[in-house]
Length: 64
Image (cartoon, rainbow, N blue to C red; front, side, top):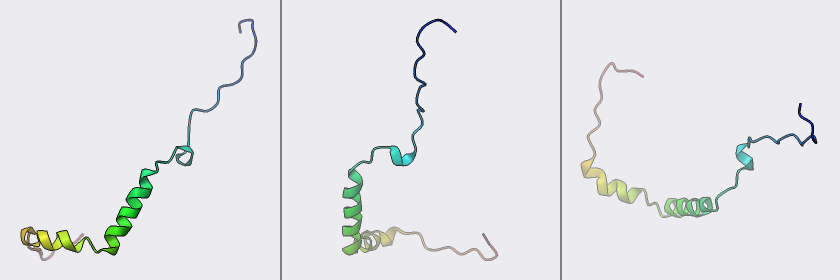
């Protein structure tokens, strides 16, 4: 060991998820999702795109 003053030990560089700064943008998207759900927005694009959906194909004997 070289002569000199002993320095403080370096602190850990690891952070847990809850220690990271949180974006306020999540508030916007949460409110947007709530609004779209209340207005039943999903039904609009589903009806609009329905003619382009492929028909459901069932393969007999096929299991997950």
